[in-house]
Image 1 (cartoon, rainbow, N blue to C red):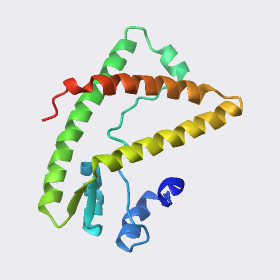
Image 2 (cartoon, rainbow, N blue to C red):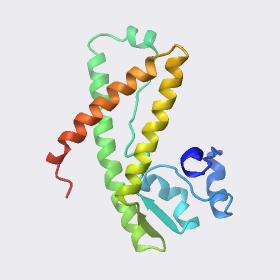
Image 3 (cartoon, rainbow, N blue to C red):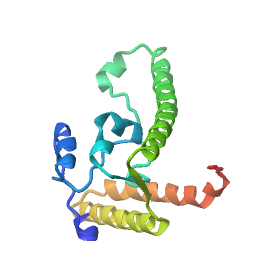
Image 4 (cartoon, rainbow, N blue to C red):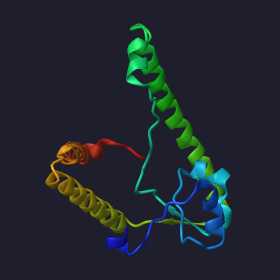
Length: 172
């Protein structure tokens, strides 16, 4: 952020975030989805809500199990656990989207001004983010670790395929 926008992101303890925003110790906060931000009260301390959350359009749930624990599970339970994890993700995502809709309705009806980033700026952020991660991948490769570059190449190839075909989606 500093090299592209002269901004200095700062990680602070979660409990200090609201107070820093309220006392103008930070210019902005990035926390979570609209409905997750609501109980934190950030909308009470900030005038503006900027959308979309371009750095992270969504998030994933995960189930973390040590390999030796997984290996000890009976084989008939493993697909059930995998199915439960998938169902939790699908239902959880649907619930979050609905709760976010309700939160955004409240924000728009309240004292906050909701600002939508323009498409050109979103593209600029995206391009700069890609440039930054490509530089990190190149640095890692020059240090002898090509994994990041390999993953990035696969990710970007899939993203290009997605972008080339996404016009079939109806978003309205």
